[in-house]
Length: 496
Image (cartoon, rainbow, N blue to C red; front, side):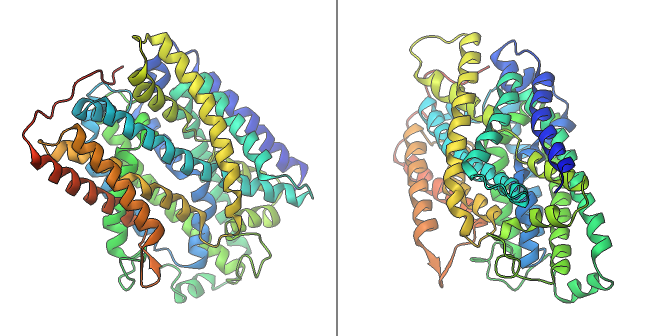
């Protein structure tokens, strides 16, 4: 890479946070800081949702999935769309019309503040681990770029710089800055992917498409794989993917916060379902890049054949080594753009609305909540950087990092979504039932993920959430049969 490329990347890292802070403007209240007074257009939120869930894991690792396999990862996107449709009609009306700040406010109204706080803390831990891995994934291409200049910088330094860039606009601009920066960044990295396809098209020999097709690289549906152990078997992808999407888009504050920033339920519904269509097209784009890279490198193993440190360096390696100057910097900035979609506002809002206000010994004012929101934005940024640095030990693992990221959510997503469904489907369920079911589910899923295998293979990660939901509903449903007490909670609940 040349100085022009580094200049483009530096300009992006400096300019994007400043632009976000400018767009966000001055926050007048906690509601403005957390949900932007519910005035953001649905299409902006739609793009923001896609950007939030995409991250560098998708940009770097999805091409690697296709490079080493086929395009069956795309079948998951169909399941994701089905899950979004269910959330749009079942859970969204209770969030948007309910005038809540976080998704877990619904659990507070249904089961009481203890369940609300438990779900929120679980979300925070899960999001810290998942986004720590996402931030570490972003450090991979940066390290590749610096290595091209003979500069060896540790992952700790890289994630610290990226974390600082992320916290600037989250702290100053609130959710409005986050949503608009997300929209700009998605456009950037999609254009970058399109540029890569154009460049690759000019480098590949005639007949590459036929060769890839004959090798089965374009296969989308896998009817032969074991649905218990293969994440891309048809049943696993459609059913498991749908339930996973219900959790990630109906019980994860990272996405729900953005949806609650729209004007009404109809707008939120359009944003969510529309995001499913965009994600499908986006997955197809990056999977195609993976197949084209397979043709370019003739299927050589990334580590043994190309001398990379891990498989997920493949895409960044091509961009740095093969792309023309200027275009290389533009694409690398796009890869970084996928990482700067901030979850800090979602984590801060959940901490303040679900936990801080639960244990505060005095009535909190709008200014108290706003001040605490900004404090916790910084606190979570520091913790996120620490977590990302610790993930550097994963660089020698062979599994695509996107699969590692999706697996992390398996520990808790089933308990979170199951608690929402328990409150909706089991009218007799009470606070104690929900709490016990939640704890049991997390324990069961930890055992399953870490200690159970099927013929030497682990359970496919799309099933983690489905299994957790079943455990929560069965345990909570059985416990609800032991009495006929009033299921209505008491105490203070989440509000604007």
